[in-house]
Image (cartoon, rainbow, N blue to C red; front, side, top):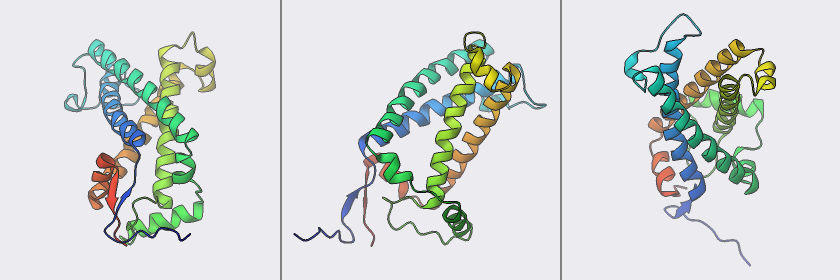
Length: 209
């Protein structure tokens, strides 16, 4: 038997439905959590600055907490389903591995020079793999530190691992900052390569080569 050859212009599947659904639910949940979290932060800032009220959600502390917890449960349930699918289906192994520092450095340098190729959208380059793995790690730390802040007595061991309650707040803030930074770079890359956006909606793209 001969292997099936995929010709230019042919539609190919890029993202399965489970990945697309998980992605968009995460977008909604993370945006709500970040914006409501900024309002909660303003009530008792960790550092010597405040977020503008125009970019916060909830209106007041109680309202922000309600939004934050609602989004937290949505994110947690969706995140567990997404991680379970990614691990059990082999999606993470196929898409995100292997990663080597040398390859990441090379692709980041190529991206900064505007030379990073995006012909085959079904394959992630090393920079994308590193960004997605870093985002998953940041979100996991965000959830764990959030739990330590929410239940510092019941989950005292978790708060202890992070230093104490106050240090858990710092860890939570830094994980949030890392998440926002990675998402900002991701959005920038989508703007630079706009044909990647429809694939996360339809799951398909035309092969260009």
